[in-house]
Length: 279
Image (tube, rainbow, N blue to C red; front, side, top):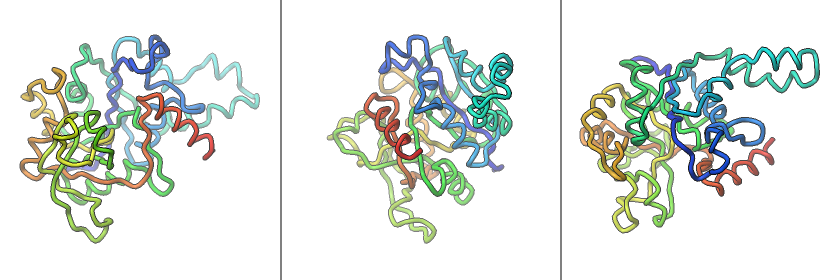
C-alpha cells in the first residue's frame, strides 16, 4: 500500500445544531477565533504529510471553495498595510496543497459521504477528517500520529477516546483486544472485533468511542457500496468498518491530545476558550 497523500473532508451536512447561524454559513466555516473549523483540519492534514485535500460538499457550501482560493480584490485592498499579515496562514495552506471538490446530492450518512468521495480518492489509502471534531496536541497532531501507525500496520485506523457510557448513543463504539506494542502506551492500541453505531448505554460494547479521524484502505469503497442503511436509515461507516474488523483489519488508537466536539455549542465554546488561552 502506497504512502497516504489524500485527506477526505465530508462537509455536506446541514449543521442544524447551530441554526440559525448555519442557515447561510456552512458549519465547517464557523470560526474558532479567526480560523474556520475546516482550516484547522486542513492544517492538521498538512502537518501529517498529506498534500491533496478532497472535500465533499453540498448546496450552500460555496464559501468553502472561496476560502481556499486567492481573493484578488481583498488582497489588492490590503496590500502594503499591516492587515496583509492576517492572510499569511491561509496563503501558506493554499500553497502547500491542492483542493478538489465533489457534491453529495443526498445526505445519507457518513458512509455515503465517504463513498461519494471515491471519485476524488481513487484506489489508494486515505485519511478522513471530520472538521467539527477539532483536535490539538502540542508535540504531534492526531492525524500525524495515525499516519505513523498506518505505516506500521497497513490497515484501517480509527481514533477513539474514552467517554461516559451515558453518551454512547452519540458515537460509534468499539470493542476488541489490546495490542501489545513497545512503541505505544499500554492499552492505547486495540484490534477491533466489534463496532456498534450509537448504542444505548446498556448495549455499548465498551466506553471507547470513535471520533472524527480515520485512515481507510481503498477496499472500504466496495464494502460501502454493499452496506445497507443502518441506524437512522443512513449508510454508516461503522457498519462497513465492522466487515473489515471481522478479519482483523481495523485498529483503534487512543490518541494523544485534546478533542473538542465543535458540532455542539458546549464543545464549540470550550474550544474557543482553549485556543484563546493558548494563543
